[in-house]
Image 1 (cartoon, rainbow, N blue to C red):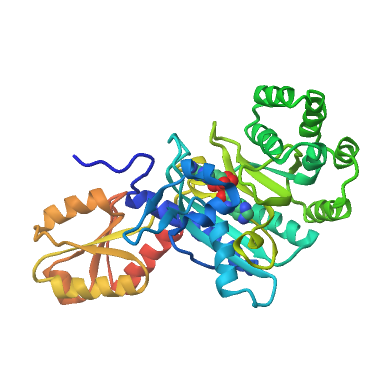
Image 2: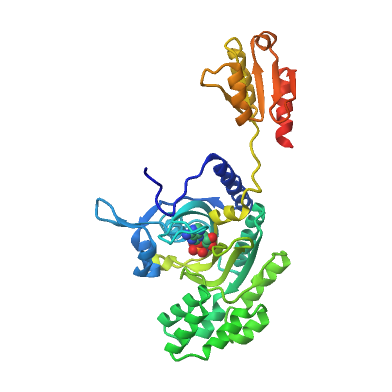
Length: 410
Ligand code: HAM
């Protein structure tokens, strides 16, 4: 038997309904903040991703050659593609641009719960606003979207300049190695690397910085930072807006295009794969041969949010089974039309079953049965049966609709 590819998932209708409910909550909040949806191709030129991160990233991607010999990659994330699209299509548009997306990404990772090879991100990119207010807006929007899903999470906000200041004397490759250890919280690896580059003392300052939760203290540890005013302004804006976050100067971010403010969200009830959000301020356009543009954004790991929410949030559709005899079929079709037009999910028998068998099927699949036999066809009424408590009433179709509608609202 053929199975789905490793690291991918199938979604049955119950799960899709739950996913769409949460997806639409996220979309709605983004819309309210003025973010409009964009869509980019599922695959891009491989260069789009290697330009920024080097050839090493190929190991973590789905890379292939098409029939024309072009080297392509399934997108491992959307930000680079959005900036490519901005350069191609929207460079002269009035700034800032507020864009959002809901899209699948592909990473060649070792699959486990919450870590997949195909996964979905809900993300936003705020392009062309190089201010503390823009940084703050991205964080506030991230919090607003996560709050709309009812997931319980911790939000951590930091800034790369603190770490960069401490590491400024290191070679770029050593800096990257140190940042990678910090991103993975691999303190043994960090110690080893610092010893190998003869900077063992740096370990203490780095660890003090990572443990520090106070802005003034972080400035003391890291020394003079040119972005100081902007950082204070971002943090003050978050405080004034009552955003619930903690400062964390150890955030290093895995992707290497970030330039300033960075933030991450962690679901409180998940294990190893608990990071549900990542983002920050970044610059990418110059890599793709364009004038530089300051941007910031974030992506929410949609699948992890769904794992964190579990089954709790899902409100099920009310289902009506329209059960009829041959004499009642025309009236039944009209009743189904009225119910569907009113937005009620209504299903009719397709299996040419008798009334008893239709009712037995309805009791397994529906909340209400509407029974239409000869008597109902002649009177224009219907028999409405609540399949949960067995209550049965004869009503005209409009009253039945009101009754079913009020059940859905409970
Ligand atoms: P990222 O941190 O690589 O950032 O991914 C964002 C989120 O996607 C993660 O926090 C995680 O929840 C989810 N995620 C990542 N890998 C997997 C996986 N294998 N399975 C399930 N979920 C996963 C970015 O992608 C940046 N583009 C975010 C950004 C937007 N920065 C600026 N703008």
